[in-house]
Image (cartoon, rainbow, N blue to C red; front, side, top):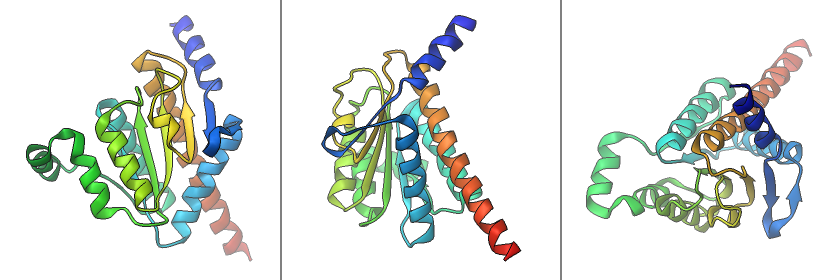
Length: 196
């Protein structure tokens, strides 16, 4: 157990963050940028859209819950079963999130795409549709360092492991930090306004 946790900690602290044009940021800089984006969306009329498959779907559903409940931001996922299964049946799973993105994404929205491999076709198609709609794209991936999802985001978080458990746990911790930090900033702002 100790070896597993030590390795997980090592991988999490070594998360690579890149911006547009392959600029490199520290983990702190990247996380701070995401928190700023979340708060910007919260204060405006935009929303946050999140997509993932399997374990990554569970992660984005949890993030959506925290964004809505704790941060007060408008956020949505595309996992409502009747619509998901209807679109999958008619279009195929590779296209299901792309179609949803085309329906709901608007310029200025924030789009969070999570894929351990960074190669899931449905996530890639949705991410590209989000960019075409004028969204800002944040990606979380792992496995191969040159995975295609990592290449297209405005801000990309990459965990250098081929083990699902490590990658998914790192992604969960990263997103927990982002929502917790955003929540604390919202609360502090509210407290400061109450005291004034």
